[in-house]
Length: 349
Image 1 (cartoon, rainbow, N blue to C red):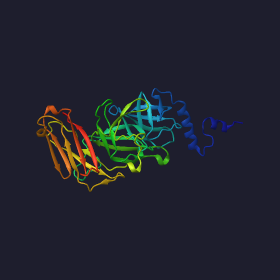
Image 2 (tube, helix red, strand yellow):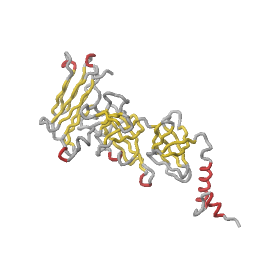
Image 3 (cartoon, rainbow, N blue to C red):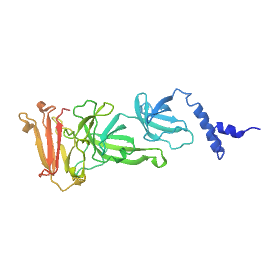
Image 4 (cartoon, rainbow, N blue to C red):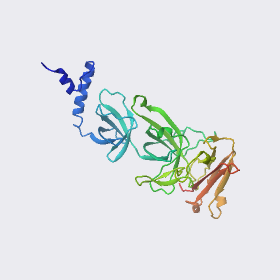
């Protein structure tokens, strides 16, 4: 007498409730057995663990995205990192249908975003980036102007570090070795748009970063454990300067609407935001500005400054002696309780 249970077990269909479940088990068994019978099957690392994916190009114009499939039992999730071909990819699209293949899309990461968390640890995440400059940044500063000359849209996984990122955090995004890196501020965050965590399949958070200004007092070049050097904005040393409630101070943050371009006809606007010891915005303070210009002849005629409705506006005339020279913008409440300062380099187009 034939032992049908034996055949069900070797086909993975033992204990199935109905014909559909048995058919699916047989299909998955055959698909898994022949998974490697194609040149599109690649050895990869998913979140650092060895695995295999079928990787197929999307379209000729979308070279930064790939269609991916895995065996039924080898699930991947939204936000998973895939290391393949000496590149970092992130899963941004996932078909939640789990009957046969696991299907989705992975996108090429091109930005390693680094920051410091509240415990003082340096955190880094690979991100897929998009150009958001043509879109609104989601914040209207002081209800006067929209700030954000250049904007990035970044996609990264939802985890315990990324889900606590809040607006006004600053990040350095520039080429390795940049002496004065471009700095961007988190101005918008979109959550729960691609969130499969409630059925344990991961999630994606989308951040909008808008151009800010480098601060040579608080932004520091640090060395990671792997020897890589990265810029960390608003860096603090937990060992030498442990933060206690008594150490909390009020402070001011200066935001610029763009770069200081020599010969530009447009003014660059600077906004001061004042924060109390708990990090809450204080809108009752009138800014007191101080501008320190470089020591160059005729500089007062070439650097125009206008103060208007609490804002500071600066325009630089066409004077080639000002190329790569620094201008320091300071702000306070007039009583030295709230103090902020940035240094900006005057540049050509």
